[in-house]
Amino acid sequence: MMVLTLTLANLSIGILVNAQPFLKKHPAINPYNYEVVKEASFSKAAVTSAHPLASMVGAAIMKDGGNAFDAAIATQFSLAVVFPGAGNIGGGGFMLARKANGELIGIDYREAAPGKATRDMYLDAQGNPITKKSLDGASASGIPGSVAGMIATHAYAKLSLAKLIEPAIELAEYGYVITAREANGLNSQKANFLKNSSAPSAFTQREWKAGDTLYQPELAATLKRIQEKGLAGFYEGETADFIVKEMQYSEGIITKEDLKNYQPKFRKPIEFDYKGHHIISFSPPSSGGIIIAQMLKMIEPFNVGNMGQNTEASVSLMIEAQRRAYADRAEHMGDPDYWKVPTKTLISDEYAKDRMKDYVPGVAGSSKITLAGQVHESEETTHFSVIDAKGNMVAVTTTLNDTYGNKTIVAGAGFLLNNEMDDFSVKPGSPNMYGALGGEANSIVPGKRMLSSMTPTLVTLNGKPYISIGTPGGTTIPNQVFEGLVNIIDHKMTLKAAIDAPKFHHQWIPDVVGVESDFPEATIEALKVKGYNIVKRGKFGRMDGVVISKDGKRTAAGDKRGDDSVAGY
Ligand code: GLY
Image 1 (tube, rainbow, N blue to C red):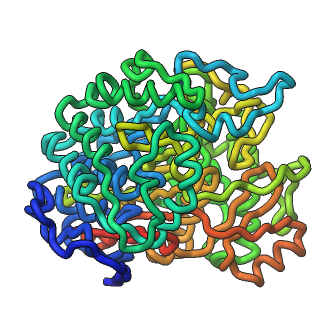
Image 2: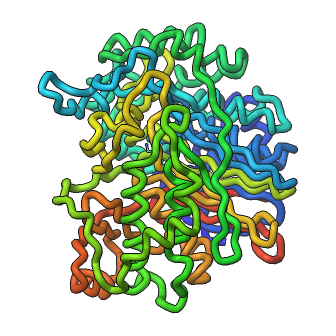
């Protein structure tokens, strides 16, 4: 077991005074003193998420008799408290599951465009995008889906919803000690929080440092309303009033009807085979499942394992697959309820073969477009994976879009809103904050869901549960999952090594290859000689996963890039 201990100065209280039922029953989960555990194997069940407390909550829920769905719900609500940058109740996401009996479930709780949204709502009089409006403040928010998504997931759970929300309430009410990373994040956004929100909030009360305790009483009250009233505790009544009031502060257009009418949707997952493995991933409105199917199929005829991991040979092949798949993303993908996505063709073997017929090994392709500038970097989004004792597998990727979403905290309700409207093509042909292009397939229509890159993914081997994996990272997400799977399947790496390995990213436009700062220099130089335009970037995402090894153990791994942490029993 690899354990990293957080050095938390100024621990506020060593023991929980007046602890409520969940934390009292689980004294090992101490919000004032906890460790990051990067990798561990468990005999029965495991969770990996962006925060140690959320992973511990998920594992404890399973030990208390819950299954992987119970754990997922409790983990998501806990992340909304302890990982405010991306864990959320004001955003949306995708829940992908494979039950131990083989049944697949895909719940789409992606945000939707409000009823008053219009195609050109983010364009000025000259028809140019007003980027700030689709990123900053309430005007950038889609109708949040996370609470509805978790309540839909509850149909597969065993414990009461009230029990599953309880840990999050206690963490919000009794507070938790924040890490250096969280302190820096909150401090760096303080001015934006104050500018965009109609009132100061728990996040803005001070300059933060590692070891300070963050109390979120307004968020606790919102979670209690959900605990008592279910959907109505968020989409109606006091919480809905708070959201609609916050809308008025910065040109938001979400109405009470929008909130009341929001529905999660069941989606048929994308399924395909790759070198003896059965891969299951999310379908539109996420582009992720289709893109990884396309890329893996494009490289399947090649012996990638022999080429070596992160060598010029394997990386250039994979870049050319990335270029082709992301070009298709821009043209063909959007909300399937509003746009006919040619999924069957895109993920077929014949199409992959046809797309690669002009591929020449060792020769850089061209997207035939001038560079469109740097890709925005942010941690945004978050992923967690769960596998329980029965073999139920859950993979959830959820987001506010940018880190801390639109930097608007709903006054009185204590949670951040998303800026997911920027994931639409605000002007078909103009890049969004990730530099990604989109067309009519992803134009704004009331009720429509914006195209996503989130790629929660499951793998079975010989019909048995094997891997649950995913990551944040905006448009880099499908590429990271693609590279993670190739690392495991072709390069025979452990889950932890596959997750931590340096990643690269090409998204068709701009025609550049982004590489992480620790990417092998020899490969960078060799790629440059072949004609690739390489740009060094900080870090890509924070991949989390759980794998079942041959002896049945659940080995969980959290990305080295964040405070990601595993738990289990
Ligand atoms: N907001 C990032 C995504 O959905 O892909």
